[in-house]
Amino acid sequence: MNYKLIFKTLGKLLLLEAILLTIPLIASILNKENIYHAYLIPIIILLAIFFLTTLIKSTNNKFYPKEGFFVVGLTWIVLSLFGSLPFIISQTIPNFFSAFFEAASGFTTTGATIIDDVEAIYKSILLWRSLMVWIGGMGVLVFVIAILPQTSSRSIYLIKAESTGPSVGKLTSKTTLSARILYLIYISLTVILFLLLLIKIPFFDSINYALSTAGTGGFAIHNNSIAHYNSTYVEIVITIFMILFGINFNVFYLILIGNIRKALKSEELKVYLLILFSAIILIAINTLTLYNNIFTSLRYSAFQSASIMSTSGFSSTNFDMWPEFSKWILIILMFIGSSAGSTAGGIKVSRIIIYFKSVLKEIKYTIHPKQVSIITFEDKPITESVSKGAFSYITAYFIILILGILLISVDNYDFTTNFTAALSSISNVGPGFNLVGPLNNYSMFSSFSKTILALIMITGRLELFPILIFLSPKLYTNH
Image (cartoon, rainbow, N blue to C red):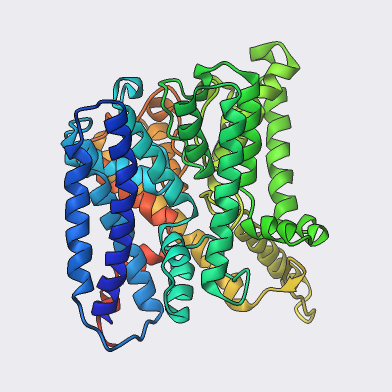
């Protein structure tokens, strides 16, 4: 393990967090909030650590996959720890475990909260929560690579360890340029969303909801989330952008360079939209008796389906009161999530496609052992390693989910609460059902359970394996 290079890389990431913290610091000054120290203290600590890492002299520039996984796993835990300091110092969330939960929820774009009354807390704290979601959406390391170029090998290993989906490709031959293009698209969509929201809601609200929607994090600045506005316009705009941010950013890149036909031919895009629109129609029909109006039913089903499948976690109505059939559709959407290469969580549509194609291949092989069958995805043959990777991921996903449910069950809450809390955490969704439903939060969990859920969020955001590898003793051996 090249620890010197690892800590120099970590130092750059902590510098980024210090720079980000200056934004809520300025907001606190403009709003005359007497909590400047809540941002200054962590900024000073982070800058001091960054300065110390610059003193590290390293002649060994070798950087391998294991270093990439180590950096990613360590970074997201450390960022969440320092990200919790403004909550603790400002006394918004005095308890360390609760503050760590909130910060981890932000950076992982989960959007689960333990704050009972978000409308009563400082505006700068609300902005800090939204900023964590936004930077976590596209990826902290991707951002650092975009602005502080690394060596080519280091860049690709970091992106592979942090990016979502069964395999990672570059948009261009240069990793740094790929990272910059991704963030250019990301920033552009965020700005467009902000301007569209500004037509109907205040400036501060528009900034927060644009940041939170872009990162598909769902941190709200009102106690009843988007339902606060009771605005069809706001819901339609956010619904459209939740869907957009759930699409693989490679599709946007293809459109950007004028290859629209290839973008629209994306197999994952077609399946993603098919699943989403099927859910919208089924829920609209199932909830028609609640709203007595097909347009109202479609309005809420579209928003909530997009919110859950994109793992944004916003709510425009109390979907915990919906019929069981609709609830189970939402739970299925929690499992699936959106596209690989998007800002959303979940298993990912691409893995679901590969998984079912692999199952069908095995069925065909059982019936016709001599028949040669090749699995294709996006018109390309799928290698055995990618197919096995999808199976391994889904297996690990369910093992971690079951283990998480078991561990938090020590708090003795009902099964639906524990199941959806763990599921929502690993898929980075936010709300669940019953005690963690859209009108409730996670504050009732013990410090132990909050820590477990926070670690599950980080594990889910990093596609499981970076954290599992980070915790593996074999990583720290020379073999």
